[in-house]
Image 1 (spheres, rainbow, N blue to C red):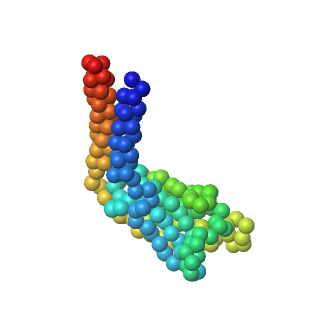
Image 2: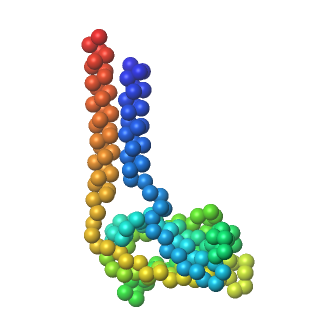
Image 3: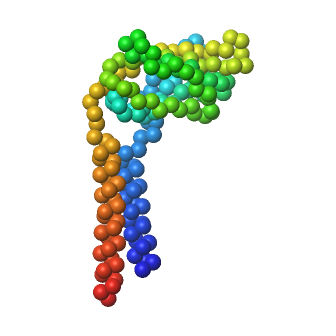
Length: 174
């Protein structure tokens, strides 16, 4: 019985790893970069294509040296402004936590948005290190990714249960 349980568990683990590998991209998506003086304002996303309205987008915020692309350790916060059609949606500060500062945001509708990012160092006078503005195009088309992911998880669970049941019956017949 332990062998069957181990076999079923191993099968489900392999299926889950395949599921993760086919759907994972981390922040390997599009990058928004702008050189400002001797630094680069670098914003990573988890989107490989046009982001969809109503679905969360992950952003990471980095301030890099323009000559070496090494991260600056001095920013203490990131000012963030997101506007749509001249109306502010987000206006706030993120406290930096090196090596990465993340934000998850869901754009409410399709259209063109403006993302303005300002890096600050509260130990400096003036505290502003760099500011950059980026246009963001958000699509209104809904994707089927969440449904497919759920279907794949369900298929893995069902395959594991069926396989375990079949092995248990086969073993019980002996």
